[in-house]
Image (cartoon, rainbow, N blue to C red; front, side, top):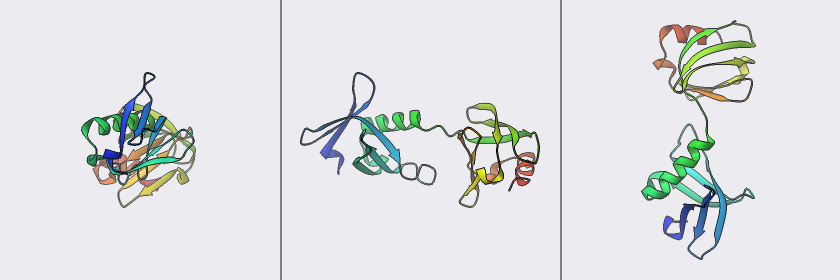
Length: 156
């Protein structure tokens, strides 16, 4: 569906509303990324409260600035993936272990249950799940400092 066939807005409660060219109104629409890490600006589905896809957006940059802004704001509220910039300390090289890290959102610590909670994304990226299910991203292993890479190598 082309953007000319629908309009995106917010209602009084702050939820996204999708209005089609035929006048159908869909409240509480949620944007979902198909490829949140590999291609965050491509493949966005607007899903209704029943889980059915209402609109598929090939690329966010194809939308007008207002619609793109609304979708990006909603995605930012729903997606919480801190990016690890530096590993400061790990409590043990056996799991479970507590990691102290610097992220793009500040310093934090989390518990890594096991090495299986570290997933490779491509050649140089990792996704680490903590004991609460929060995902942490290492976007580029090669960009980490030497001490961080040395700590991380013990788990890979």
